[in-house]
Amino acid sequence: MVNIMPVSELKNYGKVLDTVEPDNPVFLTKNGYGKYVVIDLADYEAFEKFKKSKQLAQILKQAEKSGTRPLDEVAAELLK
Image (cartoon, rainbow, N blue to C red; front, side, top):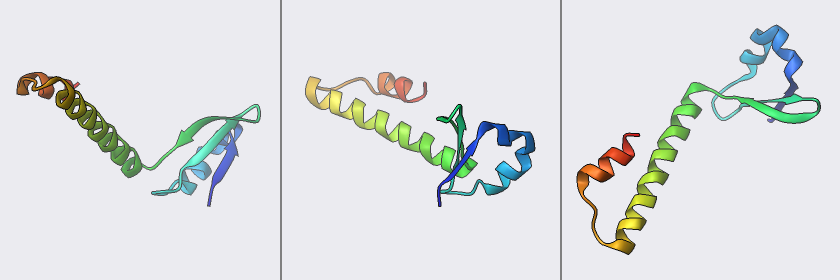
């Protein structure tokens, strides 16, 4: 189920937050256009892990093309 609400619904934010569940974000519109998304914290944490994995894959692809890279340099990039 897709939850789409106007941002004005935030006047009663409890109602909006009650509809947010894992894998079920609430999309907020402003002037009829998508503007914000309210997501469950577990979904946000999963997204952050995905971003880190994507960064690692890009670093590995670079290393594959250019040779090796020092471990401390790679670690520093991942910890940004």
